[in-house]
Length: 440
Image 1 (cartoon, rainbow, N blue to C red):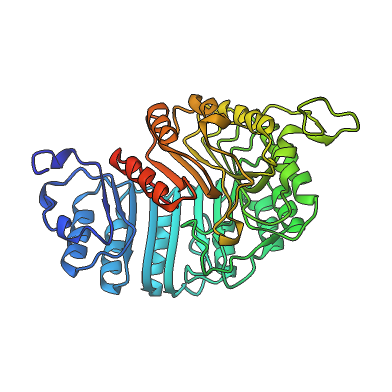
Image 2 (cartoon, rainbow, N blue to C red; image 1 turned 180 degrees about the horizontal axis):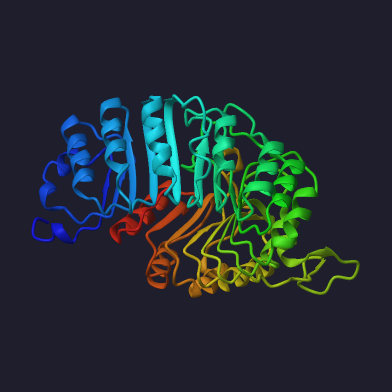
């Protein structure tokens, strides 16, 4: 590493690298463009070396820094205040005094992306010195950032080129009416709305849900919407009516849980959003996918239904997370649904199981055996992660060998492979031997 230290452009630190970090060629790393320190490293000596690394690399364009020490934070803020190439700054801090806050706001006037998470922030008496953050295109805020919701709203108001807003509140509801006014008046380029926790983990959190009417107001405030992530609350049709005009440009939609986006609406999205690359929703029933309607005169082998399937048009989809269920053990339904999945040839991550609820374990989802059509999915050559949690399977060694052979990029295959625990563990060991993550 000493030999190639001057060629290193990005470096990542986390809590577990303390011993390795001590052996890094610190003095020789002088061309760093990105520093990622997402967790506070154990050991003052390593933190100090990271600070010195920041001081020696004036060409930094992205810094993610984590420290609860006031003196360390003050030194980093002072150093970064003169770095003209810095475009992205994400900070996880302890207490920030008003002088340091002013420095960070000065830096923010030339940033493209900012995230601040602090235990306490002392804001200057007035934000009048910062009338605009003219280059800011992405902003991540929360009620854990040390700023009041009103102060955060004022910062949003000062970002005329804002395109992506991630705003998470755990202990307080979002000021939706005020936010809608700011978007429609001051942030006309905003196209990405993300109200989910940054980590994606919600265990133990009561994240503010957004009602049907509120999400409709937010969507109607945006000229063009490409990304929408939120926890839906209640029921209604206003939100989906507001989103429909944006279907042609929608690239990411994440709406875990709730009743606002039921199975038929998820199927409508799959058949109406050609630009979609990521979808996370709740349940998608087989009857919705296949357009199944009870038949008075069913044809032989139709299981008593007339089927009117529509092909999915989101052929650029890379990440899909829905609980495909309601197959009623029908082999014909199973194979038609697998055919729809097989057309998504750019998929890298696929999850077809339920949510993390032990009560939902069952067999009402896809049967991932070769005799039931698993080989139909041989076209998914880009697949890296496949999950079928909360679904019991009856797979054997031939299915696992097939998976390893047909999906060459696979790194994770999560689920209960077989209800027999001994067989399940044997299959997991085959995956592990091929360096594929397993388990459930």
